[in-house]
Length: 275
Image (cartoon, helix red, strand yellow):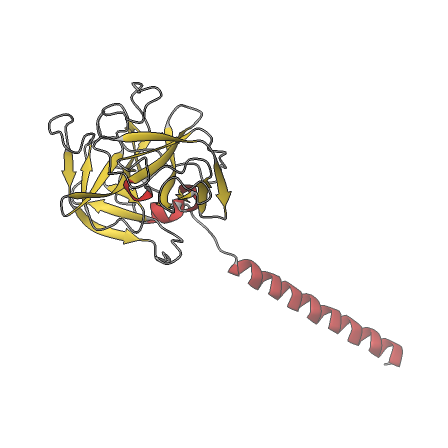
C-alpha cells in the first residue's frame, strides 16, 4: 500500500470515527432533553368558574353581597388573618405566609351573621411552595386543602386559573378582601373591592402595582381580571408591600400563571369547573 493510499484510509477512518462520535453526542443530548407533560386535572363540565354577580356598587369600595363567590376569609384563632381564593372544589390558593387557618367562604360582613349562607371548612393539608423564602418573599404561594370537598353553587364558586403564556397589562384588574384602605386604619367589616390601575411585570414571579398604594396587603386576597369570555381569571396573589399610601413602595403580587404546573401537580385529587 502506497503512502498516498495509507493516508486516504487513515483519513476515512478518522472521518468515520468523528461522525459516529457526533451522532452519539447528538443522541445523548436529545435523550437528556426534558419531556414535559402537562398534568391532567379533573374537570366538571356542569359547573363554571369565574362567574361574578353583575350587581356592583359603582364608585364605592364595598363589594356587592355575594359578588365574589370564590373569595375566602382565612381565620387564625377566630380572627381574620388573610385572604385567599377557591380554585376548585377543595383547594384554596393563598400566599405562603397565610397558611395556618380556618376557611370561611361566602362571607361578606365579618360582624353580621345570616347575611350570606356561610360555609366553614378546616384545613387538612398545607402545601407551601418548596422554594418559598420568608426573607425575600420569593415564591410566596401556597395551597390549603379543605377537610371536605365543597358543593359548587351560585354562592360558592371557584375562580378560573389564567392561561400559561398570556401577558397582561392589568389596567382593569380588581383585588378583593377585608383589608384597610388607609394607613393605620382598622380592617374592613365588609368585603371590599379595589381596582388596580396599573400593574407591571417584575421578573418571572411577580407583578407590582405602581399607583394603587392605599391597601393593607395582608388582608387582601386574589387579583382578578376578566378574560375574553367574561370569566374572571386570578392573575395574582397579594404578597407584600410597605404599609399603605406609599406610592414609591408599590404592592407586590405573586403571578399565578408562573405557577400553574405547581398548582396542578398538587391538586390532582380536586375537580375544576369549566371556564
